[in-house]
Amino acid sequence: LIIGGVNGSASLTVTDGGFFQHIGGAGISKVQIRAGGEINVTDGGIFEARNIEMAGGQFNLDGGTLRFSSFDSSLLNRNGRIEPGRPIGGAFLAGNYTQQADATLAIDIGGILAGDFDGLGVNGNAILDGTLEIQILNDFVPVIGNEFTILQTGAGNVGGTFDTLNFPVVDGKTFDVVYNPKSIVLQVIETAVLAGDYNNDGVVNATDYAVW
Image 1 (cartoon, rainbow, N blue to C red):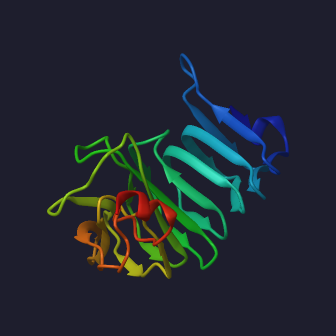
Image 2 (image 1 turned 180 degrees about the horizontal axis):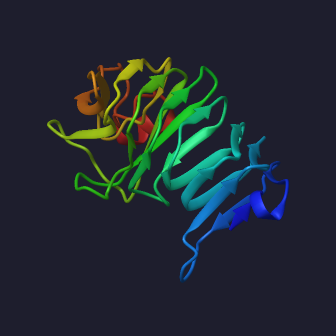
């Protein structure tokens, strides 16, 4: 799929619950955005593509969700949502990744092996703010000692921290974030003991009495 360039000025906007998916086929494995081309993902739209190649155009993530495997440039996440992998696994950015205060990085974890959890590789710098959200898949139950490298830089470094952490509680366990100069690692930790939380989900409610 080619947006712009020899085809003239062109734009593609995914918004308001819309869903665009580029699967690719024989010899067509990427979305290429050329000069005069623009892709906008806004207001609840979802854009999913294996490979995104910037060739002089623009990609604007402003309120929507992006799922990808590779992006060959820098990416600014203003107030959107990044879900690396399609639907789970690694994704790679060839440039810098900048996440602003209203944006989210969403990581799925379904196991401890490579390919069982999401990870974002960033060749340049990763400048972080906003929200880190973790979701558990495949009924996976993390245990103490499990670690997950969810972001790794190459030539660049990690700067900033996530302002909001949306983490699940599974069997009395949750996650801690370790910020390293060139990586971000999740470590499984015990949750704080909450009086009356008999099912260890971090919340005291009616379901606890069924266990008690």
